[in-house]
Length: 272
Ligand SMILES: Nc1ncnc2c1ncn2[C@@H]1O[C@H](COP(=O)(O)OP(=O)(O)OP(=O)(O)O)[C@@H](O)[C@H]1O
Ligand SMILES: [Mg+2]
View (cartoon, rainbow, N blue to C red):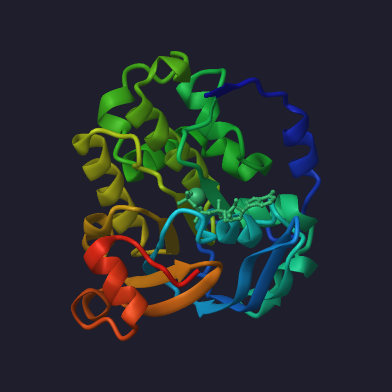
């Protein structure tokens, strides 16, 4: 999907002085307590509790309709009708300086379908850069972000060509590069490889594992093998609730809950 951009956002972001991203930002720890979301009379999320350590990938698995995407949308404020407490480094995200727009800079969300702006590869990456310090380092940031997203080798000679000419797998990696160029504190990914070929999937997983050495990632997936490859923590959700959370090795080898065992065996859950 290609999106036309305006430069209004630059002007808005330029004026936001607090919490500007910097090269040496410490990693965040996310805590979620009693998160609940009711939409059209349905309890989409109920009493969701979990916390993230400063690095590593946390995969969120569960049947369709479990509330996985809704959870990510609440965390980065795309959905803000929830109750409960969500904190980054002890700071309530509802009180975030600059509001939800600023928060989203710190909690990038990569969707299943890549959304690239209808402009060059380079401009896509530079889109969120703030202030003269980051702009002055734009070339360097473009290169390092594309390297971290495992895309540099494929696009280094065509940075000024339209991003829409990239394959879907490349566009997804471009979205990751654009998100990491602004140094997020946490990266949220909603089925980022669901429609991609095995090679693109492998490259994105490599990139996620590399990024996870510096910041925490939350990745929603239906691919249980991917959840095992990404290691870290696994959260199993069903019917808006966290049924089980454990380190990947323990989760897959010694699941504690009967619902988890059934889901791992049959890929279905009848807790709802
Ligand atoms: N705006 C809305 N109004 C009413 N119900 C909604 C709304 N958005 C989501 N839901 C419902 O919330 C539940 C959770 O949806 P969500 O998209 O979070 O599930 P999911 O776990 O991501 O599923 P999938 O694996 O299919 O992507 C679903 O029953 C969905 O129909
Ligand atoms: Mg979903």
